[in-house]
Length: 537
Image (cartoon, rainbow, N blue to C red; front, top):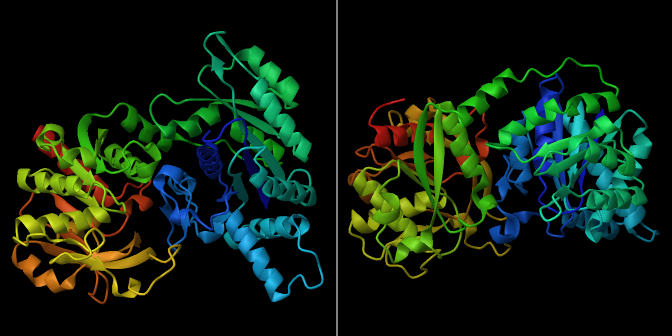
């Protein structure tokens, strides 16, 4: 087993996760099997209770683990299958250490950060290595070198590397080389300080990945090599990409990063064949067709809040050789305005998931506009509930219809709290989570798009369609096209009389990949293009 540890310096949000995922792509295409793991130093047990303003989207795995959005990059860029074992936080580590202490595991000993916390961190590395059976495990350490909360993780991987021995571990440090416009030059001092801090801890990086906006140039590379004590060819330029994040693996390949990793880990392998990846990027950069999609959400100003949704739209666009222009529409702005102003030029409207009542009436207006004007509509999780509420009010005539999440005393609770959720008190990890089976109605749009009678999709919600209204909806042409195997929970809805109107209680965006776009998204983009250009693709 070989191990790669990815650390970050200077500032946060450098793209360590994207770098780790892109490296995983290259190594897989050299014939290796890869596993990826994220260590987050915050004390939350998981990000499930965090606001998107704090953390961006919560990425859900098949086993119901609520994780960091970087795990979305891991799954989109590689073939690795992730579980809760691939995501660890300080909260989980300390929770386990304290449980061990109460259970008497450390009986007679003073429990300390070293060795007990660092041992628990290392156990999670070795456990995943054994469970995955992969050739290489890439572990990303969240945060920035110098953060107090990250020190136990850095000490743990230092100890781990010492035990693993030379040739089995590669340290990659992702840093930032700022361009000072007034001086007209790149500055290496922040990176020097970051690497110096890392070396104080006892870790010397084998490879330095320099995030930058301007080319490094030979002089800057030489300076980084000399003062960070890494070979000249181990200074990797990672410029901001021009078009799409899926260019990153090719950029790292041009910098020979995968060659450096293989050399460090004493691996002799053929070069990665990235022809298929280049074809995907060509379709994203120079597509034959174009389409405009409106995403109506409440966290629109936060790019990471709907990260997987945006990426899934791009994947679907590439599958249709169609460039996707995403129009980010703040739901609250639609509440007191004519939605036609913002929605009339769109090829399709997508309403993503979310919690809380802010912006809900704006989303309902968007769903109504899509239904009445024949605009292709795709609803995800809350987006299905919004479509249900809108139909109840404006087609069934159920005045005041709502979800009990937004109006506990609504006279028509067409969306209500799941029975299994009624007595749940804890907030963390208590929703309906993870992969669930959905049976599709034969002949429905959902069945045609998926091309099979049942599917597994990931979920993250507490509220569901109220079956007391089911017959009333169906008589009005609102088709229940997907349910749980016991037929108790409505999972998908559609309106057959509409050109393309479909919504799901699940989060299909978590299963989309650039080379395997999700069928709901692919069908949505195809329908949106036909609306805008009046011809199929």
